[in-house]
Structures are given as structure tokens and as C-alpha cells.
View 1 (cartoon, protein in one colour):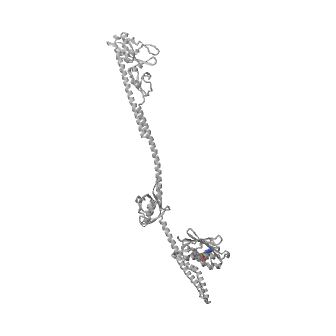
View 2: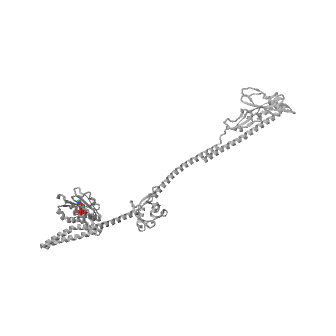
View 3: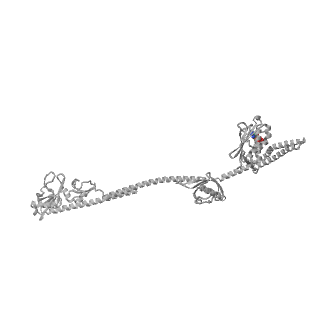
Length: 628
Ligand code: ADP
């Protein structure tokens, strides 16, 4: 605004100065003209006053005097000589013969002016009077005296238009329209060289002599402004427009920039608030492994401030001393772009030396130009989770050992359960041997019975030891075993039983898997399952009494299936089936399945059951295959 105001003021001032200059010139010009006219008229008065009557008495001489006067650009158009009475004695020209219509006009000088001139003895000017239609005249009456007596009056007639034409120089006429104005404001004569528009402003001075309210009026022509001034003004206006336009563009640019900056500021504040409120530590590194950014959560986790960390290169101050190699290895892998995608766990060291567990995920850092400029890592403190897991594990361990201790109590009964069968066998073998001895049977018949009794006694001893070792959670006795052979051994133990109950046993060996385990315990578990299967078919019609055993391999596991066609397992008891001491049998101890599961799980396997579609139950044992 200031600039535009300044430019406008400058233009206005230059215009004013221009006008002022013109006005001053006009004033001085018109004053000069007025002076010139006065000089003109005064000179004519003098000339008229000096009429030499000795020469002018004759009409001829008077005419030549008049011609001399007319020829000297005096503005005079007629000359007359009046005697003391006011009679026209001589006149030249005698009549006025204006070109208009060829009319003539006699000389009739103003009587009043004559009398005044005569009485005053000084030149007197008459009022203006019209001369034909568009011309005005006035007269000057100059008294002529000889030897102190007025002998007559010389009258000069001025025609205003001709007076102006004679006395206004061409250069003035070119600049102004010069008029003589009567006291009523009427224009009595005008001198103008060019016909052109005039400005309203003019300048007026009194035209005296001749007086009578006449005035000289000059109006300057509307001169075209000089090109240089126009160019200057135009260039100023153009410059101002350009400046305004560029200011407007600048303003728009600034506004847009401000809006973008505001948006950016808000976004930055939002991101900062987000980063600050994160519990996840964020750390960015450039391609050389130098830290370029850490968020507050990261600083809180490691106990080092951002200023201390930024710019650091490996080894970082928060790397745990005992895990330096591992950390360095992972660091190098990440920088090589081979960091584990699923993230990795690591131990780090706080500033106070405390160790923390963290889970780190690394992702490539892509800059605004789409260039890979480093790595951004997110770090979650999993120390508490790890500690909780450890606590749970320890608790479970304790629980397990407590359970084992509890189971020890039950162990006695389970041992009794497991020993029932060998003891019964020993008893029957010994009874048989005793009977044979009483009947004096040869030792060849007695010895095998006793051998079998010994064999059963040894087995009973083994069972006790293994169950004990199971309770002690020992894997010491694991060896490479063929599962098929264990099934055969268990079936052999069941032999008497199945035959007695008329149960058919089918064995389908689809594979011969090798597993690592304790043969006796596995045999015992299989035996328990087979015995349960046999017992479940107590009420089954003899024709349907059948146990189907199948051994196969799937996915690194040996899968053993034992299917019976017995009474099945009620859904209401399915949950408690593996609980120690749970039984539905009057003489049962409820330890068989509990022991089976312990044995299978001790071998890192799984024991499960489902309803046999053909009636009865199917038990599945999954055991991991021995490593090749
Ligand atoms: P016990 O044989 O001494 O009862 P177990 O732990 O071996 O103890 O079995 C617990 C219970 O599970 C049994 O009482 C029986 O009701 C049920 N059970 C086990 N195996 C079978 C099976 N094959 N068919 C039906 N029920 C079964």
C-alpha cells in the first residue's frame, strides 16, 4: 500500500509541478503580452500626438502618415483628424470597407471621448463598439496642441482582432488562445493560431489602456504530454503493477507455505507424541551401523540418553559383556540384510549393569527418495515375561516333583498293582514246582518251572526299579529299541489272559520304527493298555472280542494304535481317566493309565484315546522316532 501510495503521490506531484510550471509560464507570458500591448498603445499615442500638421494638412500627407502608421504593425486600422470643434477634417481610409458584404461605414468618432480628450489634454480611449457583425473596435483620441492651444484631436481606430493579430507574436499564439473580454464577459476578439481544445484554466489581466473593463484572457492549449513523461509514468504504473503482482504471488506462496508448515508441525507433533508414548523402543542405524535415532522408550530401557547414544558405533554401551559375540554376530547379520525376519531375542545391559531380555525386530529404513538408508529396529523389553515364564517353569517343576512325591505314595500301590501279575505267576510256578517235587517228578520238569519263577521274580525286580526311576524322572536308561519287539513282549505277557478270555489279537506292523526309550517301562505301559482293552471286553460277546494293534510312522513319530471292542469310555469320565486312582472297576486301582501317560510323556510322546467307530475304544500312542 505504501509503495502504491508513494508511486501515486510521485505521479501526482510531478503532475502538479508540471501544472504549476505551466501556470507560472502562462502568468508571465500574459503579463509580458499585456506590457507589450501597453507599450504598443503608448507608442501609438505618442506617434499620434506628434502629427505634424504642416504635412498633414493636405489629405495626401495625412494618408501617407496613416499608411506609415498602419504598416508598422501598430494595430491601427483607421486614422482621423478632428478639428477643435470635433469635425472630421481628414480620415484615412475615409470609409471602412470591410470585406463582409461590401458595406461601407462612415467615420464617426465618439463625441464623448473627443470632449474628454480635449478637456483633459491627454489621450483618451473610447469604449468598445461593434464593427459589423463579429468585430469590435475602440478609438484613441489624442489631443494635439500648438503653442499651448489644442488645435485638434488625432483619432486612431483599433480593431481588436487586428490589434491582437499585430501585437501577439506567433509563438504565444501557438501556446494560448488569447482573447479580449468585455466587462459583460463577452469575447470581443480572439487571436489563435491553431484550433484545438483548450483546458478550462486560463489567466486574465486587465487590459488598460484602453480600460473600460476590458480584460486580456489567455487559455493554454491542451498540449500533449511529452513522450518521456508518459513513458516514465507508464513505467512507474507497470512497475507498481508488477510489484503488486509479485507481492500477491509472494503472499500466496507464503500462505501456502505456512499452511504446509503448520500441517508438518502438527504431523511432527503427532509423530513425536506417538513415539514418546510408545513402550516399544525404537532405534535407527545407518548402513554403517551408527545410531542415528533413538526414542525415549529405548533410552528408558537401556538407561543411556539419546545424546549419548546418537553417533555411537558398535560395540554399543548397552551390549551385554557375556553376550558380546552373539550380539555382534546378530548386528552384522542385520547390517548384511540377513537379520531373522521373525525377530530375535537378545540380552542387553542397562547402564546400571542390570541385564534385560529384549525382543528385536529389524526393518529396512527407506528414506524420502526411496533409498535404503539404514535399519530401524523395534525393541520390546521381555524381561518380565521371561522371568514370569521362568517362574512358571520352576513352579511347574516344583509341581511336578510334588506330584511325583505324591505319586510316590501312590507308587506303592501301583507297584503292588504291577507286581500282582508276576507274583501270581511266581506263586503258580512255585506251586507247580512244589507239586512236581512232591510227586517225585524228575528235575527236568521242575527246573523249567523254577526258571520261569526266577524269570518273573527278576522282572518284578526290574519293574520296581523302573517305576522308581520313572518317579525320579530319569532318562538314563534310554536305549535304542524297536517298538514292534516291545509290542510282541507285551503280548507275550498277555498271552495267558487273552487265551483264557478268548480274545483275538491282530497285529498290523506297517513299519518297524526305532525309538529311544526304556524298554521295560514301554513294555509295561503297553501291557497296561492291552490289559485294559481285554478287561473292557468282559461283557462283550465272545465272537466280537478282538484287539487290533497297528504300528505306523507319521511325520517323525511312531504311531501305535490299540483298538478294542469293549464297553467304551463314558463321556462323563473321559476327563478323569488319566487321574491317578481313578477307576470304574471294583478291584481296580486306577493307576494303569496314569502310569502309561507318565511313561509316554517321559518319552516325549503323547497318549490319547477316542471312541472306536465299531464299538469300544481306541488308544493312540505317539512316540518320537530316534534320530537317524
Ligand atoms: P484300573 O484298570 O485299575 O481301573 P486304569 O487307570 O488302568 O485303572 O483305568 C482307569 C479306568 O479307565 C478304568 O477303571 C476304566 O473304567 C477305564 N478304561 C481304561 N481303559 C479302558 C478301555 N480300553 N475301555 C474302557 N474303559 C477303559
